[in-house]
Length: 422
Image (cartoon, rainbow, N blue to C red):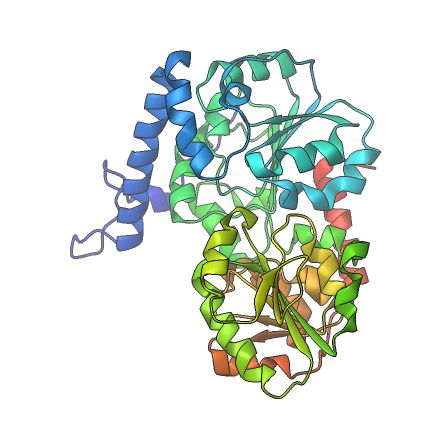
């Protein structure tokens, strides 16, 4: 069985995994990736050598990072029936666009979820059609037993940032593999290069990604061009407006409502200063803040001292709604939206949920993770690096330039092809 081979780019690497400039100096990006790869290897080795006895010691660290599943769910084997299709997702956000398509499938499905915070939401949505479980720890007895029990014929990875280690865990020959919305960075590219030679070309059905730069990153991992497909944006598969829960309808009573969603604490000050400058021209304006991680509410409220602010259901000039699953609906109530993750170097979060409602969407300068969507949405997205530009952007009227329904149908066709649906 023919296998993928690493390309010439990696052939210029030294034994340590570092490429060099002509003067012999290691390139900084490769040095960082190599260090990350070494760290990953050490952690993976320790995990494989660990016994069940140490699991209670390592799991509290994961819980401090927000994990809410019990360590036993990820370490101790649980019985499982065979499945035909194994889908792995980081959280609800990655798999939600495929809800309707997965309900069409007439075959047993297994879903693993990385995020403990999202596990309950994924189970609520898919338990009727799939066996939904937290992703077992790499090298754990639970991982080995789950793969042995499931015996999947196909494996689909929804995005690729965190999961190339799954390729080392699944049996050989590997099941049919597809990557939807695949994105690699310097570290995960190094991890993929480690495992890519284990993928038979007869098993790889394709990698669907958004941009040419991401396609080039996959080629550098050793994936041949014929398996890489560009122009795919999974979020557009579910490009339908969502209505808010009834409890938030009272927010409509204000003359102007701005919803700032998926915000991180380290960008809150910039957003607040920009909105406050614009607020001086409005008699009845309100700002709703929706943290990216509701469990970090204390960090938000600490920065709101001295302002007319309150946590929902209280009312104030600035209202914080720290709850999962409500942001998409809140955008329907808004006259303008601010989307976080874009003032702190994270690459920006999803602007589509807000853009579907025809309102101006303000983002910061760091939007590389949303490049494809921003190109499609055109002038409806306003890039505002500073508080002053945020204030002027909030006064704009939306000018959408994209036929979202047409694009949604294109993305659905691609998803059906990847999922092998008729």
